[in-house]
Each structure stands twice: as C-alpha cells, then as structure tokens.
Length: 306
Picture (cartoon, rainbow, N blue to C red):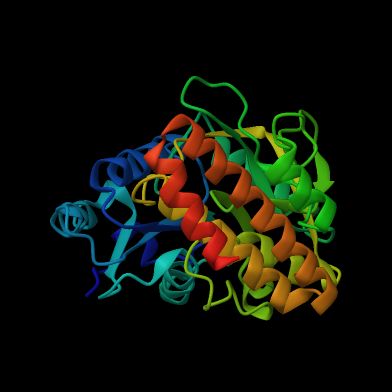
C-alpha cells in the first residue's frame, strides 16, 4: 500500500530521495520526518521523503498515512507487508523513490540545522571522487557518537570485542575533519542512485547489522571511495528498532560470521570463530560471577552461534 507523491514532487524532477525504514517506531519516525522538513524548509533542493514501514503494529500506518496527505511533509509512504529488516527495507524504498541522489536515514535520527543540505552540497561538489558520504552523528546530549570506522579485519574485530576498541578510537571514531574512511554508519549515508544500483544495494541476506559494512566494502573493491563530512551533524538515538539488548548482540555475531564467510578465507573465518567464542565465554563467566541473567543468556546464545 502506498500514498501518492506530495504535489511538490510531481511537477519537477526530484533531486534527493530521503529513505527511511520504520518498524514500531511511530513517535521517533514522526520526529525524524519533522526534523528533515525543518532542515530543508528554505532549501532549493527538490526532495521527497520515502518511508517504508515494515508492518509495524504500533499505529505507524495510521500516522504515516495521515502525514502523507499533507503537502508540507514531502512524504511518500509505503507498507512493505512484512518485516523485511533494514537492508531489504531500504532496497524496497529506494526502488519506490525518484531522486537522482539517495540519502539513507535511520528513523531514530533528528536532523540538525541544515545538515542534509550541507551533506548534499558537499557530495555534489565532490562526486567525481566521493561515492558515499556520512554525516557526524551525535548522541542525544550532543556529544560525538562513533560514526566512522575501519573495516573488520581480524585485529579490528579483536580490538572491538576484547580491547574496548571503540573507547580508544581504535575501531570506530568521530573525526572532526573531512576525511576518507573505510565505512560510515548506516544511520546516515548519502550516495548517487547509479552508484547504489551498480552495487545492487544492501545484501538482501543480511537482516540487520553489518549491512553498511558489506555495502561499503564491496564499494571499495571496485574503487568507490567513502568519506566522512563532520560539518553535517545529526542526532542518532540508536537501537530504536532492536527490541532489547540481546537481539543486537546476536545479530552482530551473525553479521561478523556472514561477512567473513562472504569476503574472507577459511583460515580467517576460523580465527574469527575463536575470537567470537573467547568474547562470549569471558562475558558468560562474568555473568555467572555477577549473577547477571542478561549476560548469561545473551552470551550463551552467542557462544553457540559462534
């Protein structure tokens, strides 16, 4: 089920399609859409906001249907009919969109100032070199959130899971200057439609977590560069659709394994299994010592998966 495009996007070619996938995030999605429109209120960019809802049960359908009838929202709304996950949900919405350029934006984001316009103008000015670009993500208290990262080689996986690599900036980080990076957070990625289409979009077999890593890894293999642009700033609330703390950890484990089976050698995959099992065992033992049911149950599952 879908809505008709807002009148503002029917008469002219669409410059930018802002893609949002929602799943039981009614209020957050509404705030995100409103922040996008505030950010682009005085912009000359012809844009549409394309929302694909993964069969939410929280009243999102009724809200989005209503919002799509209001011209000022620039909203085109579609129901996927079932929970496609993040990657397939984005692919679905991109196919429904009309823009020459694509901004993949999480539903749990709040766009600040002219963040989208800044990111778009940067991309247009540098698109011969820049094929993907991410904004600087902030926590709700406006502190920097790690939103650029190195690819998950074995040392990076080890540092991520066993050395608090994010804390020390060894794995994920938040640069203060424009720079080329391996990958940026899927919460905010701007690219050109032709670039996205050439790569086939997100891997349809990844349900949630690791989609952007896989996409940008495949991009780098064919010479497409990814950049980070800190002058564009967006609040990212994080994990709004994850359904608790256990689910994302299990999905990260599955994501690591899938990524290595797809892109790395058998020897590297074997080493990855060892790292994942070590992390799970350490966390499980800590859970036993502390009597922490969450750690025990989560990392027992993680150990079994790895």
